Figure 1 (spheres, rainbow, N blue to C red):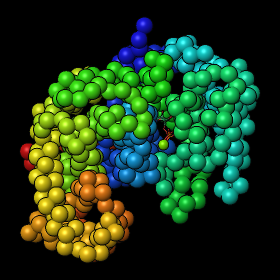
Figure 2 (cartoon, rainbow, N blue to C red):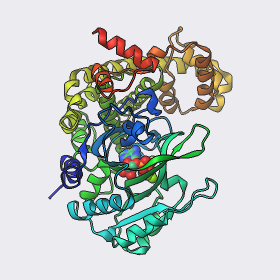
Figure 3 (cartoon, rainbow, N blue to C red):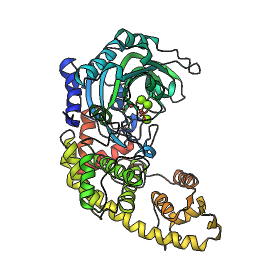
Figure 4 (cartoon, rainbow, N blue to C red):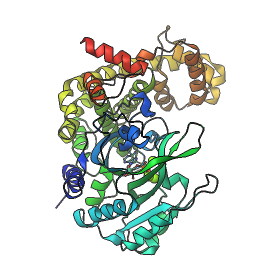
Length: 494
Ligand code: ATP
Ligand code: MG
Ligand code: MG
Ligand code: MG
């Protein structure tokens, strides 16, 4: 029997809620409040940051929370956790994904966290224990942190054989939400698609044969903005399991794209255009395009449902870049007809709408926004092509097929297109088509200098939906952030 995404999600939540007394907490918005200190919500723990740091108001409904569970909407584009460049290239990173998580706030700690995790994996999901690897924090002299031998011993005491319990350093086994904030050593569980002793060297290599599925973080410190660690008053457990990856494991495939979250999207794409079906290969431009289009459409849908709009700054800018990447692949690589990407929203809503009703509620708005963005992309693309033609023929030094940051800035400013500016996120696509290399990094520096000089309109910063505003107010968070104040006032007007 095949496992569905709904069954994997629900059995995780039921296991912790019904068998282990956890309270189900709704996923927070994909757009964090400023004091959460991330770009997008990048992990399930983001909304619980005030509990970890003990800054939560005593009157807050979550201040007494001891155990929680949910499936959190996460986006990892920009900020400390940024997977954008990997998405589409590999078979298990997404821009948007669901993180299944369970938490203990000053309640249970390492022993129970590990034994519950093992119980879920071996009894509910029925994974043989010898197909799992367990990593623990091996210590770091520079940070003055010793190895977490306690966790190693816990896994051994739970029946894991010692050749499957492995130490790793800061990069893999010490988790930080961002450059500052709650953090601590972690223990991770990886699924071994091969079996036997040889796969041991594939753990944490990024190869698909051994896949990281679950991270159990032992929250013990706050990283201050100067980089130093201060111990927390209480210790906590914060776990995160990738739903898409767990679903892949349950269906015995090492690709998250071979699951019910993506196959219907691939089918919808293929049905409406003249292209072969999804073949599942890495390093294949058509398959990569399929993955990018499906992934990015999910990401855009979820962000727009939470009130974000494509724009020129911050998260809005990230969203627009992701949408432009999506359109580039859908049009240039898959020859998808105009209007097909917006119609994929229906497929997204069908698979995620029950878990995240805001998608259902805003279905038409999501389609409209993506449709507008597609029109925008098409218009800018046409102007961009003319600008590139003109630029390449009028600049002698482009004979080397390289456009410098200065030239790129001129293109962005509209020097080659009658003053009509070209958004910088269009440049990589044009560069690819014209086979010219671009100094995008240089351009970025120029733009940043420019922006810091300008008086940045803070009110443009975050777009929150009225629902999100209500939710945040309901959580008892004081709107001290300017952008929040603005959106709060803005939405209370309508
Ligand atoms: P990886 O090493 O594969 O990039 P990670 O160590 O960055 O993952 P964590 O921060 O530990 O990931 O997040 C917890 C879990 O969330 C991971 O074990 C994985 O199952 C899932 N996950 C993380 N990033 C992604 C992503 N981009 N797409 C899908 N699932 C993800
Ligand atoms: Mg990662
Ligand atoms: Mg990792
Ligand atoms: Mg990890």
